[in-house]
Length: 228
Ligand SMILES: [Zn+2]
Image (tube, rainbow, N blue to C red):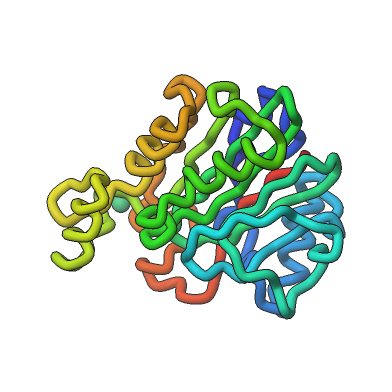
């Protein structure tokens, strides 16, 4: 696993992401023992975890008690927010970009699943907006981390998809999407300060440390968690 050190240094109890050595941490019922073991290794009680049925959109919802411990009939969304102490937010990824937001003053967090579609729909801005509206956060005070994902070294897409990306004003290198750079720009456009954004420079496709959909791990997931 890796830790998002800048967020934990700012006071967040846990901000981490499982890797291959932690095992499959997907939503599948047979993965739940592995998920519990990963959480315990972080001293996170498994019964505090809220997850989503991720649908590559930009809907952000508040983590509610009623959403804890459910593996079936999960809420359909791609972002979670909370300011409840002891609540754990979880997002499963395998090449998509995890975006983590933390407000040390209001003790509020957001966790976003920003893959190709989510980034096109600017879920980063949706997460910032939700934090500001619900909890009166100030974007300039938010700390962010952009996690390991499909890197610009490997993430080549069709000409059509690259065109959509260009039309949205997002950066590319040839037909290679730049997911992390795009989310960084979107966060800055939403009012975050560049020095408050940590980018973890790791490509999930060629790096070998994490499960990667493009590298053939179709159903396994890395789990990103944040606990307040
Ligand atoms: Zn790569």
